[in-house]
Length: 218
Image (cartoon, rainbow, N blue to C red; front, side):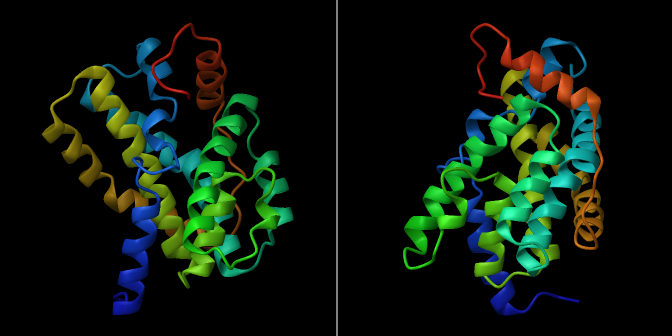
């Protein structure tokens, strides 16, 4: 089914909110790519694509399923916070999610000052506030999940481009090629909460937190 004009305008607006240049802070979070490069797991565009596909299919799916459930109204905010904590074994990854969530909460408060955001204070995870914004924007769980999955993937891809000095055209192709995978993951996320865990990404998050003078926060 094609999105309606209203849905298209809301999608564009929420995608703008998720832009890494805004207070969400995506431009300072590599999504594990910085550590993956340091550990020589990611060394070029091909291995970056493999890393992104794995991240989208695991932690991306989990985060998107939380956001979708909040957007659809099947999971309230307190429960969503608990479910996100439970599905994020790494303390470093939880900290990164909360840091980005604070940025999104700050921006959402500016755009919808009359809305009650108290459920997201003093802390909120990025998938939870993303779901709340999707619901407020009248987006479906699927479209909310799709935005979160896409921005999760594209933000990490951009970090890889910067760190490895890759050709932007090569990275653009990687992002385009992952489009169908993002839709598949978003569709699965909209069905039910996911409970996958990826030990490799957890290890990267913990190792990154112990790095001396990293270029990215996470």
